[in-house]
Image 1 (cartoon, rainbow, N blue to C red):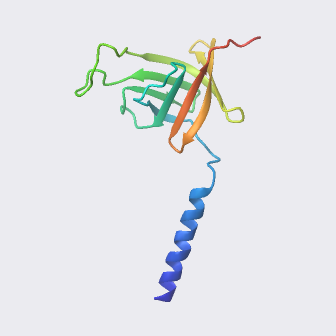
Image 2: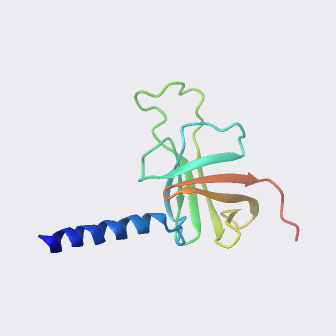
Image 3: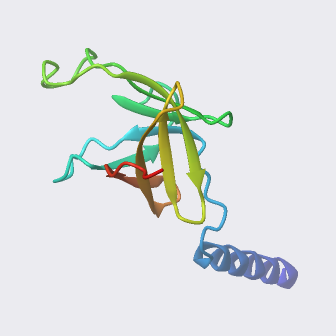
Length: 137
């Protein structure tokens, strides 16, 4: 009985210490759904990690360097104000810089469009701040 209690104490101590460590291997790949709460600026958008088809605006970053931003279920039930929502289906390329925490967005043809600053708000939530400055070559 004593060994079981010691084992449970050690296990709980490891689980608590693992929760306090910072997230070092943040991964941008996968599906992200736009937060339904609008921000005061149209250049700041909050996304949460999701599954395909969940949410009204989805951002999908792929390993190949291609991203897709598209809208889903805009005419679904329990959605108020469908006439305001605009359908989106945009493909392009991206480069994620982990050190600077930025994503450079390119058109599918390779033309630079803009840069997003990535702010990690948690394990599964990011804030993208659009930087409209054009790159100087």
